[in-house]
Length: 330
Length: 93
Image (tube, rainbow over all chains, first blue to last red; front, side, top):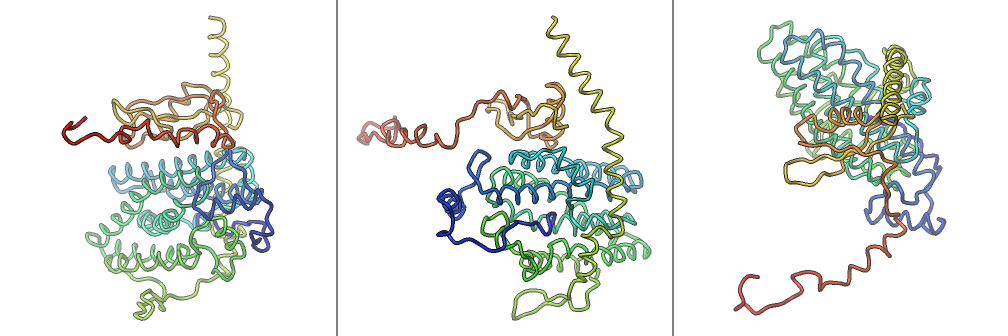
């Protein structure tokens, strides 16, 4: 999802009998759906896994602003420009809520951002694909934010209090993103020229599979899921989340009058779900490893933003120090 | 940015209600914390007033003290109005 392949460091689940008294009390709390708060005792593995997951989630929000900023100056009219600006500002805000949640675990924000910039930690694979046309602003809002919502709605029940509260806040804001995206596409399909309609279909063709990949590997190839589920950091498996997303998305796709680039996509009456084709996992792992179309460009942009903003942060610190001195003297 | 002060943010959602904790921001000083909090926590008319307080200025009770601090009030039902049964004839009180 926005966090993929998060390592828990656990090879297998411990039974309650194998746990230390502290660990057992902790697990029993989790089992009873009691939220864990920053000052509560927690196993080191739980803390580390959460830092990995929340930082990856935060980085995804921040890097996720980059494909969209490209279209701010190219939006078709002022209304769309304002909407896109508001959406991008929200993503920045979501990153900040998540960094704050991460800091309650004792992690340092600058250190975690440095890890992103050195390539040591990841952000969601989806943001390594380019936004080539205005229709991509629609598709990203509809499919990418849509997939994120499916995941985040479930994460509102995650076991760590500050993470759960950040998710509740984010979910409230996120549905505007998806609706504005879908409306962009709908407007093009209902009022557009043939060329504009073709642009929408082309955009869906490019983003469909990468959006499916957002949910991460199959459950059978997801070695960290068992521990994350036991700790209730994760509340639903990758495959279940992906199925839920497809089931809710296909009717919206049909209403648009578009198709998915998946010949195997069809309703399965007996399962009560849509069947769909196999994801190209070679592409997924390639993008995760840093070889997607935009990986290098995204990191270069992030590093440049931090470097070029240094003087602003220094000026703010200098101003604050000066004001403090002045106030002390007065 | 980690060397900047961490501020806790409290927002009053409507006139007459209490300020409520909503999250935190980093800032070089209090004035900047207020500006950042406005951008981060009130983009959709969530508030009519904001407080920012340096996180270090907050003294919090520890989770270990939860029982000694809060359990004693659990068995004092006589502190609630509903504890006192009055005859119907008395009417609403």
